[in-house]
Amino acid sequence: MEIVYVYTKKRSEFGRQCNFSDRPAELHVDILPDESLTTNFVEKNPVDRGIQCVQEMSEHEVNTERFETDTRGINHVEGGWPKDVNPQEVEQVIRYRKKVEKDEMYITTIQQLGTLMEHCIRQNNAIDIYEDYFADLEIEETEETPSAKTINVFRDPNEIKRTATHLSWYPDGAKKLAVAYSNLEFQRSSPDTSFDSYIWDIENPNKPETIIKPASPLVCLEYNPKDVHVLIGGCYNGQIAYWDTRKGSHPVEISLVENSHMDPVYKVIWLQSKTGTECFSASTDGQVLWWDIRKAGEPIEKLIMDPSKKGNINNALGVVALEYEPTIPTKFMVGTERGTIISCNRKAKTPAEKIVASYKEHQGPVYALQRNPFFPKNFLTVGDWTARIWSEDIRESSIMWTKYHSSYMTDGCWSPVRPAVFFTTKDDGSLDVWDYLFKQNDPTLSLQVCDEQLQSIRVQDQGKLIATGSERGTTTLLELSSSLCTMQRNEKALVTAMFERETKREKILESRQRELKLKRAVASAQGDAENEEQGRENEDEDLVALAEQDFFSIINTERKKADANKAKVEEQKLIIEEEEEKKGNSDSEGEKKDSENGEKGDEEKE
Image 1 (tube, one colour):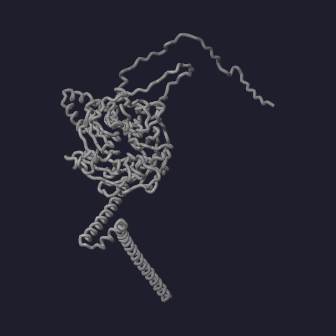
Image 2 (tube, rainbow, N blue to C red; image 1 turned 30 degrees about the vertical axis):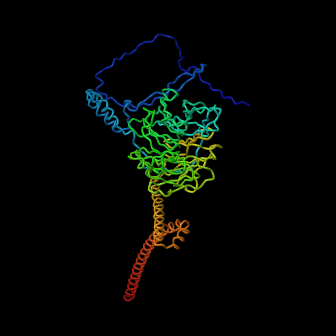
Image 3 (tube, helix red, strand yellow; image 1 turned 90 degrees about the horizontal axis):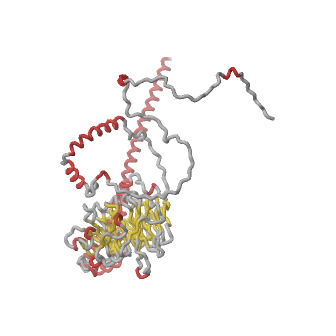
């Protein structure tokens, strides 16, 4: 059943009917502007008005042809500095400023810009646009579990796969990644193997952005931190070459074979210099060579890693790892094939003085060597089945180390943003993330990146992205969780205390070892054959044990002192509490006596 409502209204109540018709426009009133009224108004500047984000437009639908786009970059120099002035070098900036200030147009230009600058300053002083209204608000920190996710995978585009031996990040942001490809097993390599290496855009894994064409396969490849277009590479045949991506895929200049290394160049590093054109390289032929790419035909300096410090190339130790810290420009370190780390000083006069110290504890080649970015005195080494942290002051042994793994370690590096975090790769395809503030016996995070052997690793400067290269040429790009790339509260102070504590412990053990050796020497000098034989038999077993006993006895005495101080404090507290209780009891007894005397007086009156 339908329910119908009927509304009725008289025609006379509708009002007059609207009749519309077309007619030309009519001007009824024309009021001219009166300039005298401007004095009654104050100009409002700036003016805030609410507007729509977009214009209101009618909707249309059309079909257009597909348009292919191409991304191209432009050169931009920060602050308009000339090409010959590096804005990061303080001396060059000061020299250029003095030159500009002497110019005749300098004062007139400053006067012209002064009024504009004054207007902007007054606007900025009117309101603080950077004011923080919630500075006192405490943010609740949520503990995020360490994790990582795969962003992209870059594969060797050639049919015959090669090892991704070295990685280098683009210096100006995480945009590109340079990967060096070569087959280190020379006898198994095919004659059809490609020599090319590639620069990848991290957002496009399908096709490399730039092809690098060397004369021999590249074992290492490194971006110039001062010029993002220039790369230096170390070849398998020992030559050094450099590329400018603006000039094509072929090298701009290459070193002569007779003046180069005799073995593959495993590491090449740019040096901190005014020109930004100097670098040095290391190889398993036992030589460290310094180069200037403006004259790349021959090296400008040479050092042979002879442990006897005689400069004999036949006794030289093959170099696999190389380390250079720009904040310590005269020092550098090398890791050798025999597991020895050698500290060197480039500015020394003789070759014997250039080799300063050596550290030996690894059982195989040192594949990675890097100083801590926050504490340059401490450095990380990766070799055989362990990763070790060293202090420059202790040469006998490392101060901290990881457990022995079942798989061989292949590479490692520090986090650039967290002093307690470092990364290691293994030949079973796994990547371990170590956070020594959180856990020291086991890695904080272990990832199975691939089924192949991981050969190289590199962390981007912001610490968020990690790139790893495998034996079959697969480069995997990973993104870490914020907990692994954000500095924790008091992390620097805690890491400093940890390194100092371990260094002190190793110094005590080292001094104890020297004392025992000295006692043994004295006993042998006195002709005590029995003591000498017993010392020889028991020294190897008891040396470390006795040193550890001394170390722990010192710790125990310090703990006992601390416990005795605590006990004294607690006894004093108890004595004070007992005195207060006695005073309270005496006061209550006096009050009771006063009340009893009052009651007796009242009874006598009655």
